[in-house]
Length: 129
Image (cartoon, rainbow, N blue to C red; front, side, top):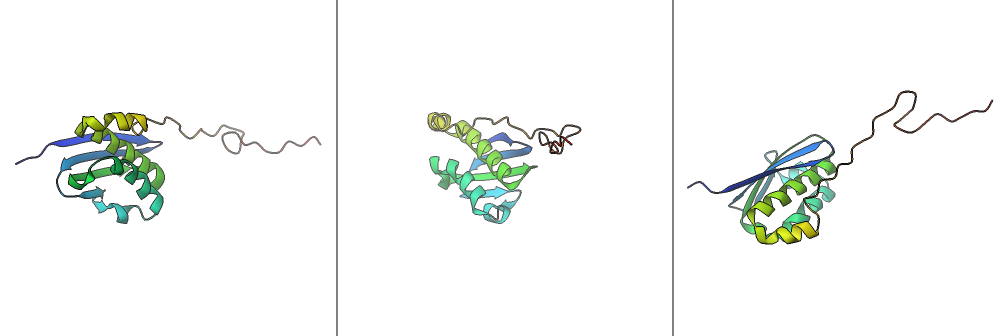
């Protein structure tokens, strides 16, 4: 018997996360690795666990494919994608997800470097003489 799948995409800066949720054993796999093996630091794992505290996670199997960016932006992209999937999976939790703004897209990007400057806005020190 084939179960029901829910999938969605989350983005943060240059990171893109594709999430597939189905009912099954309690598992989170990111790029076919355990979450604790993929994210070696504590902070990104806590970021992802914020959304999982809202939902009855005991009966969900979560598979994630994430590419690009750093480990923190990847964690935030995964969090966004999971919240979108949970919105599809359980409509009763939609009000909580909207109140906490978990599925809201953050469109800030790194500003490009301009010619003649050191960074995007940093200049060389001005000398009068």
